[in-house]
Structure formats: structure tokens, C-alpha cells
Image 1: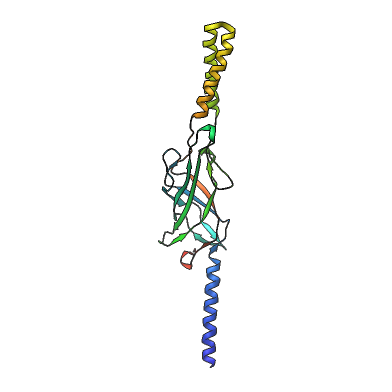
Image 2: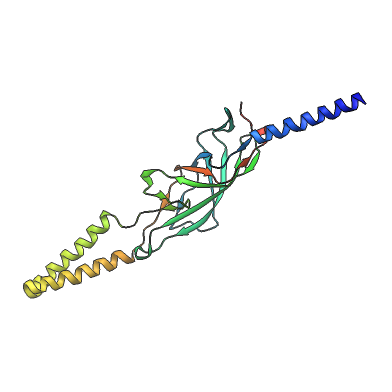
Length: 211
């Protein structure tokens, strides 16, 4: 009887220790994950459902242990692409990471949202994790200004001062129409570093624990 009780106690201890170990390897929601894109993404060429790949650039730590090493790969899909004309808004990219593959070959499901992109890409990230491109810029204002200027010149040549005013209105309207109906693309070249945060806890087993 004593031996049986000891065996049961040992089994209970083993199960408890295993459960604790698994809990320690559950990355909490909000954990930051940085990756570098290996696939270029653009609102002008990429379609919803297209896959993308990335690579982890900074180790992800948990309780002092490295649980996701540099070099682990990320596979995901493009969930949203919009490239509206300026009159309707700004270009948008939405990406969802799906799986992280460790250098050892182990695969883990990941649910995460983008929280930051480099300033040099001309993009920003909203509260929903969508990557937004630029709207109008200085070049657009120059185009509009050039339209007004050319309208003034043509109007003045045709009918003096009054014609200049009319020409400015017509030229400005034409430039504004041209600006409103042009499209702007948003692009994330290969090599772009993206910061994500886990939107759900990520379960890892002991095979993914660090050194």
C-alpha cells in the first residue's frame, strides 16, 4: 500500500511539474515580436490571401529564457489590401502572421497584430493593427499649384486680368480633380522590420525553451 501511494505521489508530482513547465512557456498576450519581412508587400501588386514570410530579428524572452530565437521564421497571409483614390482615403495593408517555425523545425500557431513600422516606409499603424500609407503630400500640392499657375497664364493671355482669374479657377479645379482621383500605393519592401504584439497567449512546449 505504501509503495502504491508513493507511486501515485510521484506521478502527481510529475504531472504537476509538467503543467507548471508548460505554463511557464506560454507567452502572454501583449508580448512584443520583431520580424523582418522576406516578402515585399504592396497595395498595387499584392492581393488578399497572398502569403508572406518573415524572420525573427530579436529573441523573445520569458522568465529569463530565450523561447523564440533570432532566425525563427514567420509565415502568414495578407488579410486586407486597399488602394482607394485620394477622395476615398489612404492605402491600407493588413497582415496576419499564422505560424512560427523554430530553427529546430517545431511549428507554433501565432496570433499577433502589427503595432509599428519604420518611419522610412511612409507608413503608420492604427489601433486595429492596419498599416496605413500616405494621403496627399508636398508633390501633390506642387501639382495642384502648377495647375493653378498654368490656368492663370492661359487666362491672362486670352482675356487679360479677368481671364487670369477665370483661368486660375479652371486650372485649380482641374488640378484638384486630378489630385483627388489619383491613387497612392503603400509599400513594405523585403527587409522591412515590423513590430508585432501577441493578441492571444502563445503556447510553447519544452522543446522551444532557450538555452
